[in-house]
Every structure is written in C-alpha cells, then in structure tokens.
Image (cartoon, rainbow, N blue to C red; front, side, top):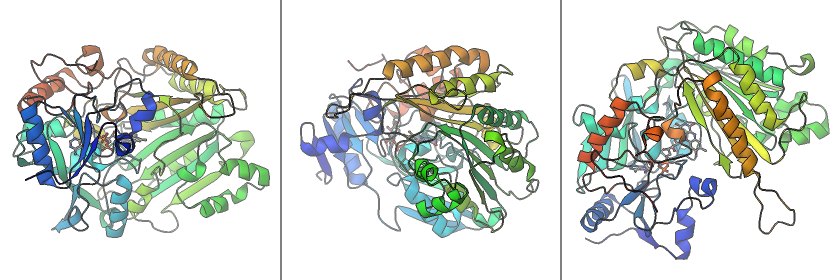
Length: 546
Ligand SMILES: Cc1cc2nc3c(=O)[nH]c(=O)nc-3n(C[C@H](O)[C@H](O)[C@H](O)COP(=O)(O)OP(=O)(O)OC[C@H]3O[C@@H](n4cnc5c(N)ncnc54)[C@H](O)[C@@H]3O)c2cc1C
C-alpha cells in the first residue's frame, strides 16, 4: 500500500508554511530546522509505512504534533524528515471521546487535538484533567513533557493520570502500552524523552468529574505593577509553598507581565466583560491605555479544589492575596471571584487560567525555567523583585529597559499534602524529575529586533536580554536554588542532552541511565529524532547537528 498522506518537500511553497513552529522565531535561524521533507500521514497505516521506510533507509524521523517544543526538538535538519500528526486523527466521536466506567471517567484522545479543543469538550461533559495553560499546545507532546498547570498541587501532573498509550513502534507495529504491560516503555513515554520511543497516536487518560468537586473556587486578580505589591505577593507565595500543612486543594501562581501584554487575552472573560470589570477605572484615557496594554501588570491566579475528605474552603488565603499593599492604598483594579456567589463547575474555573494567544509577545526571547527544592535565601523575594523591576520599570524606577519585555510566572508546589510531590515520591511509573520542588518559575525576556521593512529604526536588544538573564543566573544559587534544576516542558539554552552539564539539569542520574537503556531497546536503529534534545541511547556515540 502507498502513502496516502501529504508530503511537503524542501523548497516547495507549502513546506515553508508547515515548517513554522514555536521555536522558529525564538531561534531566528541559529538552529537548523529544515528537514528534507515534512510528511502528514492520513492514518495509522501511513505512519507504519513511513516508519518502516525510514528504518530501512536509515532516515531519522522527528515527530511533531503541535510544534510547541521550546527548543525545537520536534524538528530536524536536512538529513531527516518530520512526521507531522497535527491533522491525522480528528474524527468526531472516534478520536476524542469519553468512557464512563462505574464511578470513573476516561478520556480517549488522539494526539492531534489542541488543549483549547479538549477543554471545550470537557466543559460540555463536566470533566477536567491537569494540563498546562496554553490552549495552542497539542496533546501529542504535552502528555510526554508532563502537563504542568494550575492543578499540579491539588491533583498532580497530566502524566500521572495516563492509563494507556497507543504507539507505532520502530518496527512499524501498533502496540498498546500500559504501566503493567510495558513498564519501561510507559516510564519512557511518560516524561522521559519525548518523541524518542515511538509514534504516539492515542492516549487513554483518567479524568476528574465536576460532580466530585462541587464548591470549588477561583480568584483572578490584577494589580498595577508596583515593587512593594510584587514583593508582598512573592512573600505570600513563599510562605504558602513552605507551609508543610497547607491543605491539598490550593494552587497559586503570581504572574508579571510588562506593558504591551494583551489584557483581553489574559482576562477570563470577553472583551465586553473586561470593560465592565474595569468600571472602577473611571478615567477614559486610562481605560483605553489599559485595554491597549500600556501598563505593566501583576496577575495572580488562586484556586481551591473542593476535594472529598479534605478540609473545607478557608477564605483567609484568598483574602491575604486581595489585601496585599497596593498603589497608595487603592484596591487591586480587577478582582474576579469564581464560584463564590454563584457555584461554578471546577472544569469552568480551571479554563479561566488558559492563555488564548500562541505567544505572549510577538518577539524573540531568552527563556528561563527553574525549580527549587529549598529557597536558598530569606532575601529571595527582594532579589527577584529587583531583577524584574530593572526591566519592567515601576513608579519607583520609571524607566525600566526600553526594548525589553518580561513575562514571568512563579508557582507553588510545596507541602506534605501536595500531589505534585506525593505522586513524584511514590515513583508512580513516570519519569518527570525534580518532583520534590516546592516552587517553580519561568522568567522570559523578550527583546526588540530590527524589522527589515519598517520605517521606524529599531535597535536589536538581544544583548541586553542576555545580560539580564546572565545576572539572574549569577544570583540564582545564592537566592533561589542550590542546584540548576529545570523543567522538561520549558527547556532553554544548550539543548545537547549528551552533555552531563546539560542533562543533569533535567534528570537525576538514575532516571537518565534508565531512559538511555529504554531508548536503546525502543529505538535500536536511532529512527526517532535527530535533535540534540533527546536522551541518547545507551552506548550510542553521540550524533550532533553540523
Ligand atoms: C507558549 C507555550 C506555553 C506553554 N505552557 C505550558 C504549560 O503551562 N505547562 C506545560 O506543561 N507545558 C507548557 N508548554 C510546553 C508544552 O507543553 C510542551 O512543549 C509540549 O511537549 C508541546 O507539545 P506539542 O505537541 O504542541 O509540541 P511538539 O513540538 O510537536 O512536540 C513536543 C515533543 O513531543 C514529541 N512528540 C510530539 N508529538 C508526538 C507523537 N505523536 N509521538 C511521539 N512524540 C511526539 C516531539 O518530538 C517533541 O519532542 C508551553 C509551550 C509553549 C510554547
């Protein structure tokens, strides 16, 4: 049988369009993301044909679904091809469906849906599951890189709830992988080295049901950026993250975003609802500026999941957030209590944290993600607030750095009731490392670059962005974390996982060695991925891009 899908060869017009991915603009041509061809299969049989051919002809295959891997790991250079599953499995009622068995519910989902679509389906069916916040990220890669989001502390990671994975293996055979049937392969696919163990086509995932979490609540709150407000929120987050007894139901993040962020994209409602919520801002000019994103903002998300058998909701946590010191005693400018006066299903609350934009700013940037097991200094909040305010500017430091924008999110995971930690320590058959972390954070510096056809002359601010991140890295050990601990989902910098100084940031020694051996069996010919962001097979001589 012949391949029935679509093939885009290098040099054709369609190739350029389908080759675009999130990392294309981030790396501005520093990395070679130009495969020989991009193949979009129409079925499992097509995938089997491609894999058998690739194996027989020694052609490496990079697997892609949503193309959101930050470093570009779902790409390859001209010696390989991309197998792109974004459009392959989208049959209504077949590739996305729900199965209720007794008091449990299971989602059967293909890799080809984006999170935004999955959550539309969820809200219609009164179910939810832990995921990240970007609605454009696809199920294909998202499960494999963990699925970190606003349920991490209360429910764990998406990868903790995977019950079965359907793959096409290196021989082109369809295999159903469960923790019991193929413990090694299951371990590898669930948080090991995405894209290196086989082509995933479908997942079966145990999902949560709204009916089991009635009485859940959320708080979406925005403040104008002020140094003292930001520091107070970081201090509060730290206190909660370090509280061993904080009940399981609470999740909390503190986000900060430079002026120019699109408030309407961040707000959990329509633009009209946002205007209404901004009713407190009487000054028409200020209102327009707000809608146009002319102010730097701090936005906090707090969530209480009402879990059976756990302590009831205690409003004091949300109150503390609302009462942090603001501008000249004024209250925060938007407070949205979710599920407070009118009950709201947990699936509805959870989707309020979704970012509807594919990218925070349409600019290249320098990324950082770090977690910590223990904050190394009592001055962490003061130090980090100082780093942020250097770029962002504030009333106290009005200038900031022109041409640089920051987007940061700090999240708490800590405490003896945290499912992020408990599931990790329980060795639940998945490979995500650093699960004893109490706090994680991202801080990305977006920078201006000259635009070739723009009449306005623009500076290239990359050196300033690099310098800012360099200073952050220098302070890291003293203020934040003893070791360099990163998150697999948010990779950045050197991406060559054959170097110990790189892989040690993502994996512990035992997990890394285990993954090398699993990959050796699952990918004996090196068919899957030719990107450096892949755990090398045991005894493999490292191969690198030119
Ligand atoms: C703006 C943005 C926001 C994000 N926010 C979050 C967040 O809040 N939480 C979080 O956890 N993550 C987040 N991520 C990271 C994201 O979840 C991961 O990069 C995820 O792996 C992307 O999956 P994808 O299918 O969209 O991307 P892809 O680039 O297509 O795939 C990612 C990886 O999975 C492999 N892969 C893809 N499809 C398959 C398949 N069918 N079979 C086998 N391997 C496959 C690829 O080879 C690659 O290594 C974010 C990313 C971006 C760009």
